[in-house]
Length: 70
Image (cartoon, rainbow, N blue to C red; front, side, top):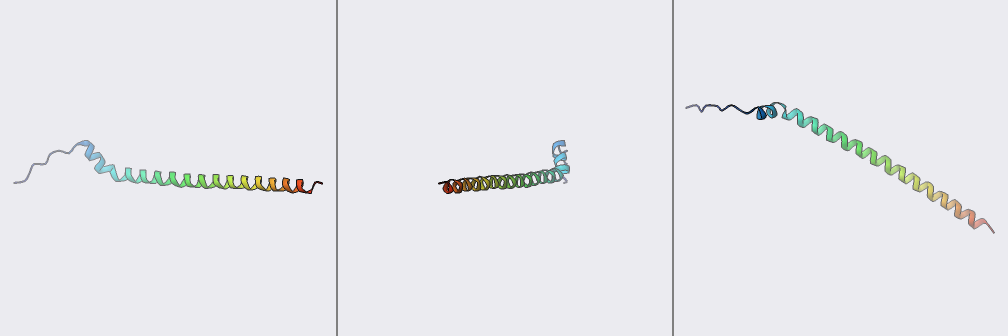
């Protein structure tokens, strides 16, 4: 009455044994990449804002100097 078990393939056995750890490592890698990418974008955005702010203040100073000239 018992059904004979068919042997499972090595492919299935591999993923049955290592599927969860591989998934955890992949998820950890994706989270790490996204975190580092977000930090990089934030720092780059801050740098661009600082450069624009400096450029604006330099141009404002130049306009003031030009207005003060007779």
